[in-house]
Image 1 (tube, rainbow, N blue to C red):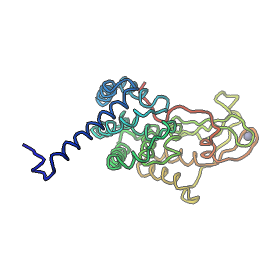
Image 2 (image 1 turned 90 degrees about the vertical axis):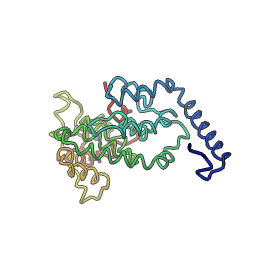
Image 3 (image 1 turned 60 degrees about the vertical axis):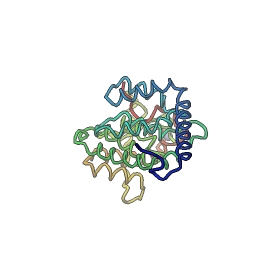
Image 4 (image 1 turned 180 degrees about the vertical axis):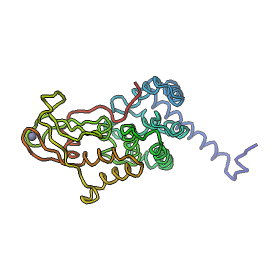
Length: 283
Ligand SMILES: [Zn+2]
């Protein structure tokens, strides 16, 4: 039988530690109650881990509804981490994406200490980074730039890159809405493997005045994030993604007024229209 004396620890110390552990667990479960109760969250997570897309979607709505987190989103993090780390690499892992989404969320409860959580779970997050890198190397991702970009965004969220861990998903969708910084015209940056242009819309009439995006040259300009993403794509044999990244960090021209602007700066400007959550959720 395992005893405190054998471990050289006074009995009182063990009892105190047990009470402390119990208090922490009780507090943990109490904090989780506002979002459907603990059983729901645990059951949904177990089902999501088994590949149940409905459960994954429900869990996503409970923990990161339209990009908004609650205290429960963070108390659930250790279980999300554990669940993700039990998964084999795949293009989409629901617990991994949800954990990243929670970490990257901008709309979170006041006073939430994400920085402290990152420190507390640094070892687990490092393991998740390794898992994500294994996912990025999957042969299944060749010819699937969208899935690769979503995983790049997971990596940025885990590594605490604040801007693009939130704004990269729209690159996977191939378009960003933006406002011309000069004349205020509503515009679209269409960035896919075949097309990198600024347009006024999608109808033939709206696309008549499209202008080409001049791609960035990150090794020359020294933009660290652009070069990091471009290099990540090239290192994983994703040349199409590299092209999209250089367009995203390139220079656009307004078809209305002819002014030139940084596409990346403009799509991340505060006055941009609200956009939906960062990561894909099962539908
Ligand atoms: Zn303009």
